[in-house]
Image (cartoon, rainbow, N blue to C red; front, side, top):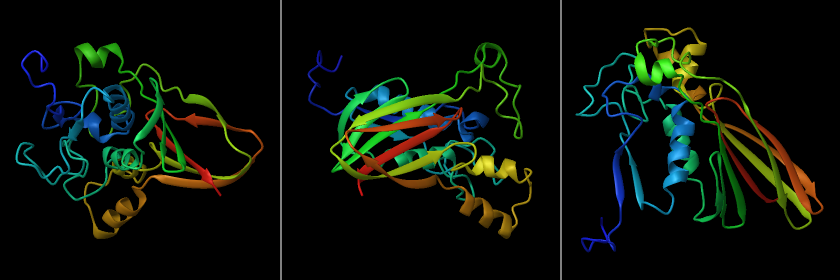
Length: 239
């Protein structure tokens, strides 16, 4: 359409991008949103110039914000500034370099400077009941009972590299790391956000980072397991 009307040279931007247009959607505060963001990012590479996530914060004039914890707002940050899985997933994507070698339904292989990067994500499908008939089966404290399966994704990575020592960084966002909602769930869904509770959730809602050094002769072999609704970013560089 753009070419037909003489606008082919203009950049294409997708704005107000989110899981749904609803001001309240309980699913987008769960870890489901992480792989969903990755999948759509990968599938739009080369087709659009920019993706603009809606929105940075739940304090938004279109979202009718409320101070209730995790009420389903569209922001990557909740009303209190707590970082949802969407925020931390977008932070991982911001680390990716511009040199993209290959993409697939659950991965992206890229390079930033001398750092090889492999993004892996495990997007789980909704079950038919929730997807087409009844979305009332979830509530504020039960949000993961709407999927066809909860299988982990096992990926075998084989990378040919020059001989040497390599530092491997693993950044993870999943139900046990990088999701404020899931931290809230782990501590029992407290309704009152006391200062110490808020501080605990804030400090606990960060991606998990682990590092290791491996000696490579010709080939680096990695066996990675990504849990359901999980995102994993591998960064590989000379040690």
